[in-house]
Length: 168
Image: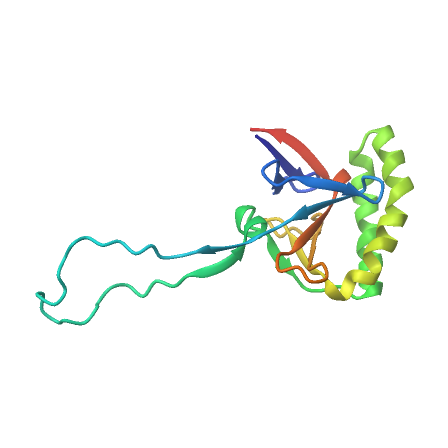
C-alpha cells in the first residue's frame, strides 16, 4: 500500500486506495471522494425486553453519521475559506516552503505549472472547502474539496508536488 504524506508536515493526506487523475500538467491531482455512513449496528442478543423490568428500550442512543471517506480516513481538518488576496498570499508562501524540498527537475516542473494551477483554482475559491492534515500546522499543504456540477460526492484537489509517496 502507498500512502501520500504532506511533504511539509508529514501528515497522511491520501493513499493508493483512492485513485487520482493528474490535471493542470500534473500539478494538481483530482480524487473522487464518497459519502459513507458510520454509526450504530443493531445487534440482536436474543433478550426479551418485554419480559424484563422497565419495558422501554433503555439502550444506548447511537446515531448514524454521514462522513466523506477521504476526510474521515486521513482525519483531515477543515479550515476557514480564503478570499482571492488570502489565497494568493498562501500560494506565494507555499511556493517558498515547498520549492527547496523538491529536486531540480521537480522544481522546474512545479515553477512551470503552478501559475496555471493557480489560475485553475482561483475561479473556484467560493466553491471550495479547505482542509489540512491532522496536525493542523500553519505551513501545511491545503487540500481543496468541491462538488462538480450535479455531483453528490465531493472532488478533492491536491498539489501533487506537495505529496511524498511512502510504502507501508
